[in-house]
Image (cartoon, rainbow over all chains, first blue to last red; front, side, top):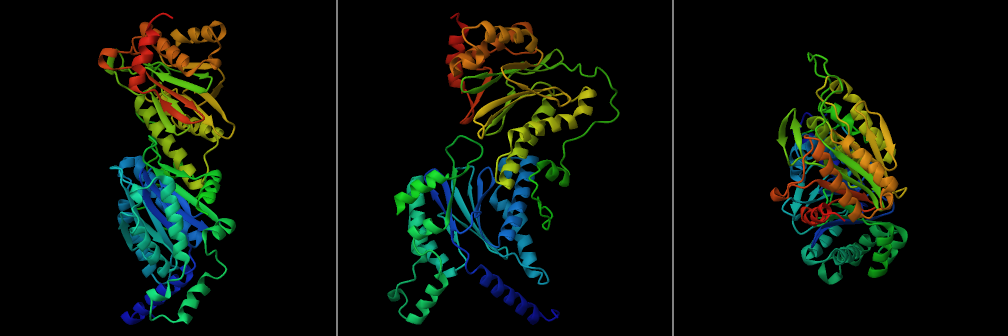
Length: 261
Length: 266
């Protein structure tokens, strides 16, 4: 069936469409720096979006929970085996992705008899020099690195809007609290449909489609706080401890809620 | 570095990961005659006791091989995770390896299972490592007899354990010391607890740290394998505390003052 190159390309193309459609409703996860490290935030109906991978590495994921879990375990295994056999300093996202996850993801995606991973991942790391670095990994193993922060989202248009807003904000200069608040406002902005004047050619009908995609989902922070769970993970480089990861507690989240709404 | 991609593991067991990747700590050596079983010189003194905020753990800095002093800056109090500390007496190679395995074990469990390992689980994990090491201990090349201090955030209290070389764990409610210098100070600890200015469990951090330094100096006075503090070379004992805020080491700068005040009669 796949002997001809065209058939293979067609199959891959169908696979891309299938995965994108499945990921379409994936809710954004935003990773940005702050003056002492990095922070990852995400709203979701069910908790389980943000995880600790190693001493200085955190993961945010969206997609099928079983696939997120499987890839999370692979990252955990690789990071811990490497950290034990060599040193914690040898465990970096760059190495985990380049020599571990990315080639395997790509191979899995192109073996069209196998089920593709329905995931997008955002990884954040505090380098040993103390700077925050962010990585975005696609379901086919393609990965990119960002200095100023990045986002993953099932909807590409939402991703683009949020990414632009992230790049327009100087997160590195902000305190933890301010950085989280800005990221939350950017999350909220990302849910608003683009203004008509920004897209003069787009018809009202087209804008209604964007609305339809968001139908039934929280559209602002107040709504999101009420109906969904907010997860916030912090990598703080100034604790003096080996492990930099910390999840904000329920009381910290409710304090944040009253500040941003 | 690349693991088998298709495997899914969710037990949170780091030992299993080590076995799977072929890195499980070495088992008994073969061809070594059994001799002097359990007569390994444990050239060290480490001690720990409950004080008002948690547990204080202290150790001297000397590492020896027979009569030779090998090293005078050895750190025998090792953080395992944010809420546990291990103090080692015995063969350093095995002890440091155990600490590394244990540290990865707790972190791997916490990260994969999304919850911290229970205190009992942590205590058993060290016991398992010691049991797996029995053959090495009996051959006289790898015996370790550690102290283990944990703060349990669920129960909001600190736990202290002493282990023998075969892996038996003993919970300590007051004080404990191990290593070649420990017999010299165990009586002092008991005396201080019963008839000192106050029971050890009611002492402040300052008092606990001060007592620890004095005990280690006393042990070093009678045991050549325990190193004395050498302020001129900036060598001080290692003292750490474990409280509800996790572990914390007393810094070198603080040690200068504590040492100075502790060495005068008060």
